Image (cartoon, rainbow, N blue to C red; front, side, top):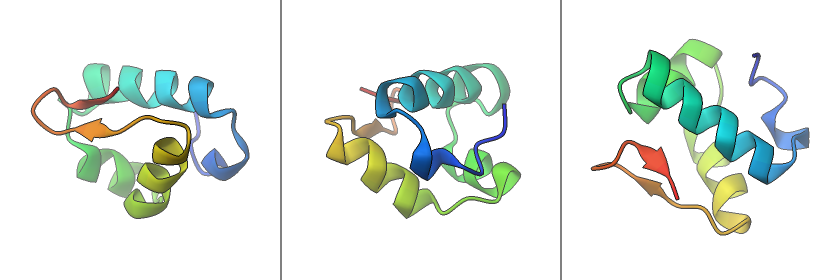
Length: 63
């Protein structure tokens, strides 16, 4: 799954995909995910926050 077009994705689907990738491929490290997909971490967090999802570093996922 390519996250380069995350700005246009449904936020619930985006959160689900990002959490799956964080869990399966990046050990909960949002910085590594952002670098790997060459996306702006702040923009990703802002999009998900606008839908009510916040990144929880201790859990390594958005909720």
